[in-house]
Amino acid sequence: MKGLAVLHFTDISSAMEATVATLEQALMLLNTWGK
Image (cartoon, rainbow, N blue to C red; front, side, top):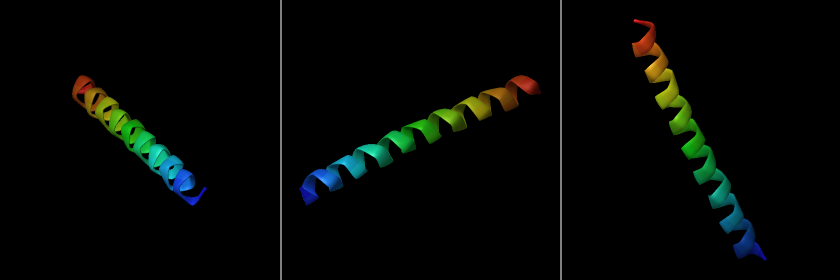
């Protein structure tokens, strides 16, 4: 059961990392587009 919790936590953190990376890319595009 503990292993499943760790696996689930890893999935969540990697998903969050992907979301943050996507947001950062979008912000960079908006910044270059605004100029």
